[in-house]
Image (cartoon, rainbow, N blue to C red):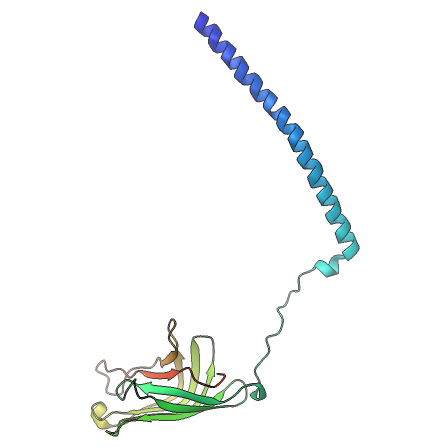
Length: 192
């Protein structure tokens, strides 16, 4: 019987403390409510003074300045084909054309008569992609029976990761048999 009485007394104490707790919280909550109401009123005043037009977010992004022929510069870029050499690159000259295109003309050769030639136009599609239109010729004495491998038309160059060059994505040599040509254009002096 005493234990029931003791448990009832503990229950009453716990219950009364629960009811008293919100009363204390209500006083602190009412202080917070007053502060929030003042902040809300001050924001209403700011809104009424400024007007809605000042606070609207524009629905269109600012126009990106398109590079024109006059604010771009030509320059030289190292180019390589792995069969010739990565250590002794050739060179491709770029000159600005209209609509963000550049003309590109260059070659890499070695003393054995192996050669890479590139001729056409090129432009940047994104930070990692270049679009090329024209002709790329690789001629390696040990590949494709020493005959030139010619790639015409649109091609894509891609820069992977932090590499400082863009690699031709159409890598398969005309000889096929899983023979790949790594044609690379490196960062250079133009504003491409």
